[in-house]
Length: 498
Image 1 (cartoon, rainbow, N blue to C red):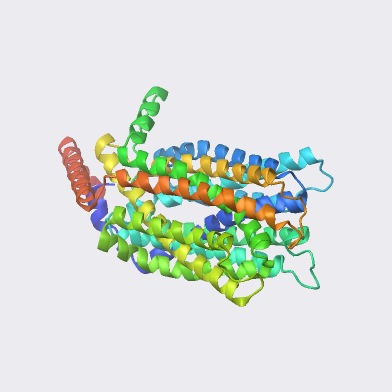
Image 2 (cartoon, rainbow, N blue to C red):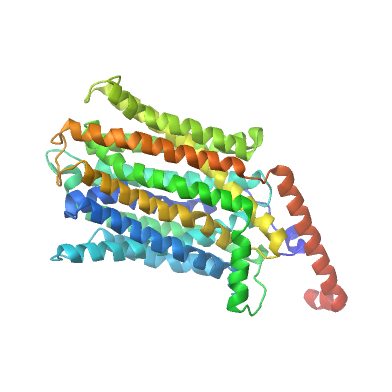
């Protein structure tokens, strides 16, 4: 984008930030619904697939998604059309996302165990790729919409806000409405019809949010960077990808995501088991805890930009992740020590809700700031390589973490098999020694993995001064390019005016 185009670009106001953020509702729904916490329970306890098979299916779908994400990112970086680089992908993603999500929860009848396994993998891959087709180009808009070091953190805070809202709201509805355990629905979380109705409802919400957000940012297409027309040989394309991936700060973020992804997948895969079988909660009580994400999203979107300005992005993010990790381990650790209230008491539920709000708020603030740090890598790489590769960089940052989140989900399934967790287990029927054994393995594993992920982030280099120097260099380069263009064709401005 030239300096002249930047000067004429309209101000990034609240309506634009809100409409941009709404699209992440679809991503939030997919993250929560396709998490191991939901899928492991549904396909293992409801459909009846072995826990290890479910973990393997989740891991396989995440690996395929992670490998293809950079290709989607690079494709959108270099795509040329009347609708710009990003919007064609965003519009095209709405239908396939809704279609695949609906059928994931409405499988054909009469499938064998092998058929159910193959169907699960196929639908998971279809949903993840469809969501990526929207999410990667949409997220890649952030650096262009908000070049300012602090403003982009605020913009991304809105994106995370709606993502958390969407994920928390759909999870609340899943457990409070579709899987509510009462006299009319004694099966609760084991009711297959509830999951089927949930799939149809969520598919419609995702379709509408994707189209609304894409249409709302449509008017800014003419102010966005247009990919230059160039014929890039395969060898040069590979060299450009390698150059982008060699950025030190990006490698730090990717390595952190590599380790943290295993921890995230492990936690996600076991959380519902702990809620139901360690804490003895009903499905609607789980929904109260998840609803705490609504409070966390409000706090996170407000406090993350403030913390980033006060402490700097790196220091704030490390502090927030560290406190969040400790808070997340306290309830299970205290239960093992006998310091938590008995199951079934209002105090226990209140403590679990409070801990979830604190942990999620701090973690959300950290992720908002980390995503803003990825956006800062965009300009740093543009100075080094001369190419704007927002889509590739955001996809690259999530590549390893998606793969290892799948590894974590597979590990969760393996741990359930290791402790001999029974299939189709009704709440209250699991031996307490099984849950204690599971908790004793879970706590040190998560502490080690998440702690290592946080420690790696100390190696990130880009700060406010570096970012501002990068912006200045890019402005100078754009001004020189425009000057050279005028010198080559002195009648260019007259033709533009005409």
